Length: 338
Ligand code: KG4
Ligand code: ZN
Image (tube, rainbow, N blue to C red; front, side, top):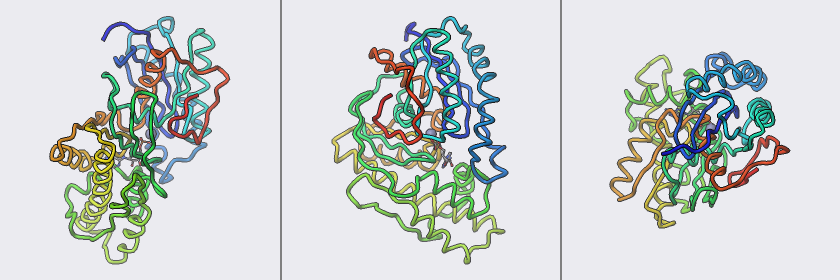
């Protein structure tokens, strides 16, 4: 990969402050993430006002650290990018204003990037985007998308209620496990028996891309009186049973969608794609079904700015840019460019 322009991107859609420096089209020079997990753990979830104030404190030192790590001076930056949405308004506006301010000061193009497109294309960071069926599975979203090319997406379906990551986090809370619950359930489930508790696989055979996870969460709630939460084995078994039910649906529906669309490549992205069982099951199922599989490395599955820089680099290459009048858009749908 040779010397394209350098993109500096900022991501502050939720509770991670992230800055990345990427040389177009896809050479990551630095990727910094300052997590606020410790801070929000006390409250059992993200408190928007706390998140916003901490983005404000973290963003400038993080920009400096990322530039230092990349060995790049401000004068060498060719474009600025930031997440425009979807996300928490008070969090989005911190990174968005910082990137826009730098773009104005440096007189460089600015890119307002869709967070979902960042996740969607993250498995391709460093390589060319190819047509595929993509599962985006995070704390805020669960969707199946047919990718026809960079910037050309067809939504096949999404969750009707909770996102998969939200279900992991809520079930963890029911089991009195720390926030965020997804990684904790993943860890506990390794020692558990996934066959111990029978749990529903909602909409598994609905023949479309829609999902529903709230019934699964409620089924776990109904099991609680029968489970001793002081017994680590019982908790591990419940974690494994819940995780297997969620993974069963995600794998089956994604492969089903790939068959329906006639695509040979499947991608999986978003925070839940860190899940070790999900990764294992996707590898097995794609291998058995003769499908190629691409997943981002775990560090690029959860929120990061590298994926935002990568989308911006693609748009820069296509000669696009966002107007400086672009604003944050907390409910921005996939496919909408700013
Ligand atoms: O993509 P992400 O960082 O933020 C959103 O855009 O939502 O995803 C965060 C979600 C959380 O719900 C978290 O519990 C989940 O990803 N997650 C996991 C794992 N690691 C993160 N869920 C299951 N297993 C994991 N190992
Ligand atoms: Zn995300």
